[in-house]
Length: 470
Image 1 (cartoon, one colour):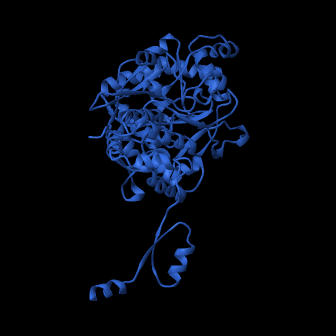
Image 2: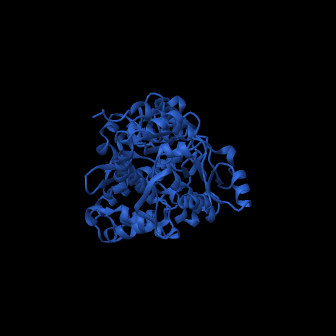
């Protein structure tokens, strides 16, 4: 009886979920209240989430996918013509960013980039002929060929590609080389100076970097990215530190290498003057990691987020190569002089692979300076990163945030957590002009469309019923 009386005399502790009205009333009466943040899952996902939660094998599948994602160690090992890495390009194929796309559905900047690629390859004499030809050219996503391309992401046969390799497995991924900002192919520009720059990249930049890498040996991109985060980069829209670290690693080979000194000097100056040069290499590193996490049955980890200017698409580890798409959202951002939201295309590019692996919008807390490029405040950047922990399976062991006392970046976006919380992944991105040939008009922030995650969770639940009993 004394024990029972003791229990009855213990002050109650109330767990309050939902709106604050009940919790506030109890607290006003002196009750001990634990406030629990909770809200219903995103409509249309309830049954799928329940089915996936009941699967005892799902947690281990997600753990395996996260370990593969964060355990990849990318190294820059070479530069090759695109057709050597992706033989189908020699047959006339063009690659593009985002989920599958036909010419008829292409946005202005995507059309401009495809036209520019055909002009660059000499397959058309003028933009009009290139536009007619583009309607008949086979198109496939970069992601279908272990590659990633920023903005329009177009890859054609002669472009130099960076080769990024996982030291442990030999797995490889590829990216184009960054052209710089302004009127460039990836933003849909195809003026003569754009094509001339691409030819210089093919004839000089790629071969000089290939020769430099032959002297340096593999460059540990993971280590460079990790160090750049300590120096104010986010890995997506701020890569000034990463580019500087890369140039430091390549510098001696460029200075001491063979071949025309003028070419080596031009390459040095090109990288030195292009703060975004490291971006494409970060994307290839991200693609390498996301490929490693793909194809694990039952896992709801997101392995791809990509946009083609018309649609936004995601893929999950447990659903393999299947795309789940929704209309590409508009970007809220800052605009270059003379441009406004009326000039902007919808979201575009494979560069959200950086967010997929714990960088970019997931790591904005590392980069107070990024807000001067994409908008917002430094405190807001920290809040955005903290919010992303609610939708990820873990933290990246290599990519760490100084302002959060060295905490790993949020890594391993889990589609079920997105659906349960209603929190969408945050992406920082460039903005392309909606008309072909205009180029870059600004930069900003965007959220992945929730509809993609609704489809993906339902698709995973339908596909994965767990291992056979017994």
